[in-house]
Image (cartoon, rainbow over all chains, first blue to last red; front, side):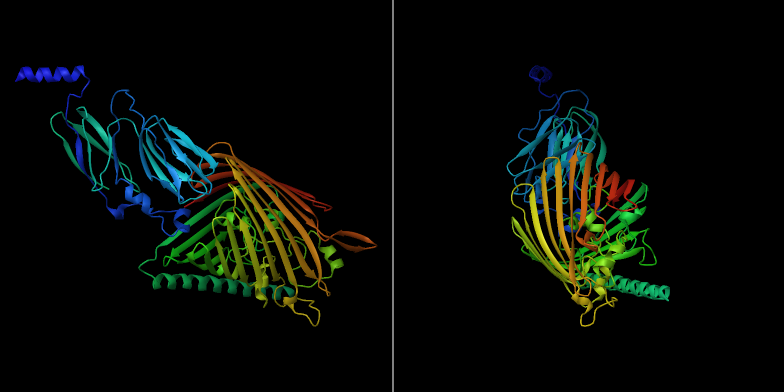
Length: 216
Length: 391
């Protein structure tokens, strides 16, 4: 039996396969009353800006990622990442990408938009451009990027730039899992729209999944 | 005696303003109580702190002493959608520079209901923003990239607000800067506006009391009619043309010739606006032609005014902006077979820049140069710095 284990582990190392099977699982629970209320001109001039129906249906409840994973290995960039400006709304409303991903911002409306962000993670301003045109931004630093349209102040999207491949989006029921994490002590970051970011210290072992319930 | 009369009038105006304030708040509260299930009150505050060097008052003071360059100003916008189609909006202004002789430091600038069943039909009723021009919309939404208002939206001519004057007597009031306006942005009148738009064309029609050239004229029995057509065809291009006619003298004006009424003295405005934007560039231009009935024969005098404005973003947080404005008064008979303009022609240049500290906080710095033709006080230059934040 011991011999078989040694053989399997050796094969895993040779083929660069992870030598663990544990991860973080759990559920995200949203307390609606804790959500920050919309404010500013966006809230004033639009009839309903608390949610954008089309976007809300497809938005994940939360995005979770390991913040301080050691090593310098760059994750693969997300292919064909884009946030479209359509019907005066950003689609998708929440985009999760890895560091090094280039995001396109195509304008699909008949009118001009002016996508910009003053976020610490990435500061950019794409100027005004017409329907059918697109401009791109490379996100080279991890963090949360809030994106707005300068012309239409109710347009608001989020880009979650994660630093490594250990991340996930919640499923429709709020459940999540990040698997195959090497054992160690980390900080799990949980982000949910309209709520303060949560940072949770976690210890991942090599033989048992960590079960968590995260409440916003 | 005149001082007593003035104080009585001021008191009446203040009582009227307080009544408007009270009625607006009552309407707002009743509206909310009537639709408790749906109502959610949204409010936005703009706070402005401004420092300046040089004489800002002579050329930038509005009718009641409010001035975009005054040290402390705050605007409060409150709204609530009572149903999917019916909303109520209130705008309150605080300006520490308002002369308490004429008005309170805090006042209701506007309070109206908006009924909006489709984009093709919107009805505003109450104390509503100006229908004409495009700057009021930008200023209302706080998209003024400089600090001051364009010359045509703020300047006060020498033409008196409450008396009928003959043309030759008007020449002695050149440079008085306390008479009728050209199109007064801060003046919201009571009335109804119907507007709508499809993908490329829009319309506005309004009937209100008062006049855009003279706020106290809402005390007369006349009406103001305004209409505007706008086109939004092609990327980044907007154009509009509007017309307005009103009885511009205030009630009980003096020197009204027998057989005529205060309301017979009309002012008209034809105003065009153009906007072009692309990439990091934003430009606006407006032109206005005004006429005013004056004298015992109700002869027309006129003026033309325009401004051109541009903004260019250098970085996501930095922009530069400039505005050039001019007023050209009609030449009238000055006797001895000579003619001269009925007020001093004026040119204004305003340059500035802004730094966005955050999405809702901006720092602005501007320099303003005003040049009056043939006036003793021919040049006024001043500098200003402003911090403006949205809460």
